[in-house]
Amino acid sequence: MDFAKGSVRLRVQPFSSSRPSNPPPRLQARPTSRWVLPKWLVACGWAFHAFSRAGRARAWHVCRSLTRLMANDARHHPSALRNRGPILEVLQDVLADKSAKEGHVLEIGSGSGCHAEHFAPNFPKLQWQPSEYVQEGNTSVLKDIDEVTSSIPNVRRAVALDASAAWADWPSQVREFEGQFTAVYLSNITHISPWKVTCGIVAGASEALENGGLLIIYGPFKVNGEFTTESNADFDKSLRSRNPEWGYRDIDEICAEAKKNGLQFEGKREMPANNFLLTFSKTK
Ligand SMILES: C[S@@+](CC[C@H](N)C(=O)[O-])C[C@H]1O[C@@H](n2cnc3c(N)ncnc32)[C@H](O)[C@@H]1O
Figure 1 (cartoon, rainbow, N blue to C red):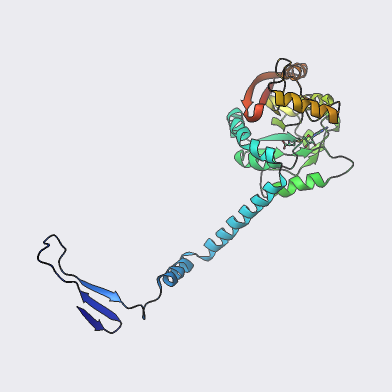
Figure 2 (figure 1 turned 90 degrees about the horizontal axis):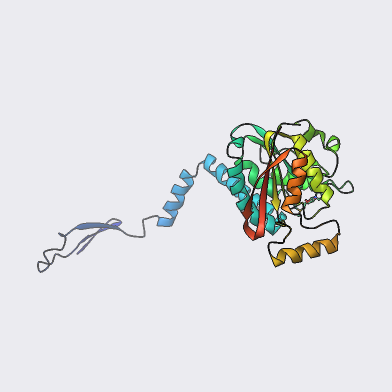
């Protein structure tokens, strides 16, 4: 039975005695759609109220950060984007104690800034110093790194660094922290540069690091004089055809160079895609 009352209809639901388990008759107030705001409009109103000015500002900030991150990803090499997750996991382990106190990390050959952008926010007490090899005065590579990392408070401006140079020629922004770096980090450089670059990295790291500081080298290497896979042997061949001074280094060769410079081999971690992460610590 329906009673029309203004904009509201009252309906008494019929009671059936044959089904005692049924609920008792109820009076239901059913608004007619004519007088009621559509539900979606009410929801929008609530959302607008809840979405305060501060909320809107936060959402804008989140959207802008996401857009920026997506834009940055487009600047990075896909392999650098792929490997930075697994590398970070290992860095969090090897730097666990050291990153609890203030310090500095020097990254050599930062490329597009893909790793600095991902790692630095995870080590807020460490000042991350990106660097890149600048050829023929083309400093746009440094600008590119700065653009990617500009919103990260513990990343310093990228500096030009030719790692094959003597320590005296490394940039002043690095030399001013001589003997104070917590870590020197590099990825995928030793096989795509002449051997003198690896020697320069090891010698420079030994000057830059504090006692107990770590030289951390990620990349593909030979182990005991052998390639670990056929695809690595093929890649080495293609690198050498592009530049006879390039090519895979043997882990033992790097260890020997490190030892000469007062850096002790701590160990190697196997990483995805047949890469390794090597760590060396500075001893007195
Ligand atoms: C394959 S890219 C790796 C870039 C970045 N580290 C990454 O993993 O995405 C090789 C890097 O080695 C750097 N490099 C080559 N010769 C160098 C040198 N003499 N000193 C410093 N970096 C050098 C290049 O500039 C380049 O950034």
